[in-house]
Length: 126
Image (cartoon, rainbow, N blue to C red; front, side, top):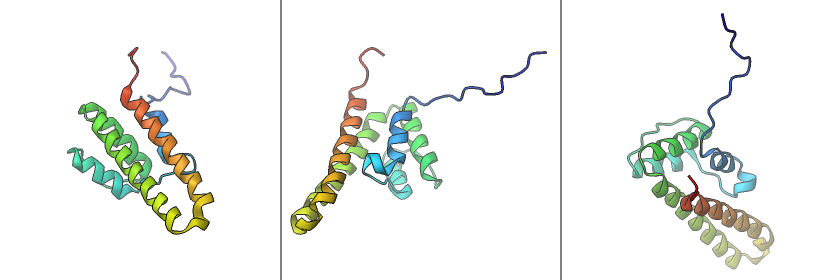
């Protein structure tokens, strides 16, 4: 009789980097609310229901990939990020004293958008 290893490897999502990035608001600069995640999913006929953010993000990316809609979903998230960037820039223009703090968030959002764009281009070696 074979013994099972104590620590079986969990299957790692091909989008694990994006999942972790979106779950950490400090690094991503954006908080994707569960309702926003579900709204994006519905636009592409992906049923998620209401769960915690971690499960929603993972399921959205996984289901989008399975249905060959990952590029569209990533583009929709990128659009949301750019809307937030524009909102912050407007706040900075209207309230110059907030510029120092809000520009940090804008930079994080731009970095997150670049991460999405790299993912959209994909790996040419796959």
